[in-house]
Image (cartoon, rainbow, N blue to C red; front, side):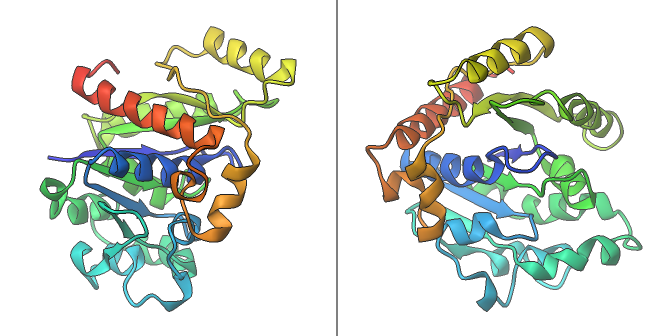
Length: 258
């Protein structure tokens, strides 16, 4: 049965989608059958994996509304062993449409249940907000990985996110856990990045991945070409970092250390 991992942080611009795309691609590259679910209306994880989001008949939107099965919404990506349930701008109106639906927090979980046995890992990319879409992802998940940007105010919102995750654990998903925090956009040329890492370690009692994702131009460029970093520039520091993170996630799930 596949592990369902949500990549979540209600702050925008922290490397959440970059982590979703590249962790998924690196897990697939490690011979792990992987499914990425893009539940962000911006559809950036979808376009970052080479999918034209404007020409989609069935997306996560149709899945949530019960108009299509998860298999019908799943498409292949540019990465071998990596499939995708894409998203596009249609998902923007889902919050309003889902309000009156029965059991609205469990819609994604029901869809995933149909295919969990087909995958080793299912990675969910969330919108940068704590809304009904993110709530669906957290209710469906086993674990949460939280990207933390190495800049000022890194702790801002982190306490609220952890509080929300604990609320979901109590009321909707008792099996949910925080797998850990992963530092992103680390700039070794500045003291600030290291100060942020030290500050978070001192103030947050959560597992922190040893892998730190560097600030890397090639990593930033890759999505505009519809490629994960291991295909766009496999020798870059960003590619090496996400390969290491994938190894950690695989090892972590074998040991269950979170």
